Image (cartoon, rainbow, N blue to C red):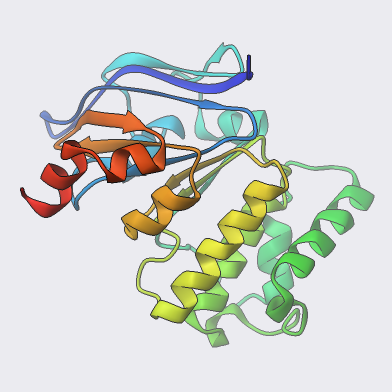
Length: 238
């Protein structure tokens, strides 16, 4: 049986008293890529923020590697090994590519490990290795997304949560970003992915969940979800 890394049980989240997540439950196993899909406003990003404790959980619990984390501070959650790459990227644009990447390693003390992680990121994102000293503000949107993901990888995450990594990118860059996710998956990394390119995301994921108006309305393998009536209803309105 695969080891379960992350479990959300009956999560409820409110904004200004209004329900956003209404009893959401999901799990992610070690070395598994799990995708959460849904229309805009379904609550996908809220779910990831709840895991990171940047959005309070009103009811339910979140367990990471056997430890309840929904009452911990965000910094404690990061130190446990959960990394969240938000859709906003949140780069320090006056700083160089390498300075931004090194900020992601603040939880590590081993300088040799930090250098290994840096080289891993540069091997994964070859364009960044040529722009180490370049200000993040001068990069293209696709390159900035590479820096955002690379910064997340610098801390040796036990699970990497990606929130709409292809948002706002040109189609050719969307393919590059999703190919990066696929390569990370091949390394055995555990990934929880929220992605607007639903078919492509479900194609690369091991399993997926469909979120609709704050509730999980379907789950299964990518091919099962793409062929399901739930998918047709949630995305095509049929």
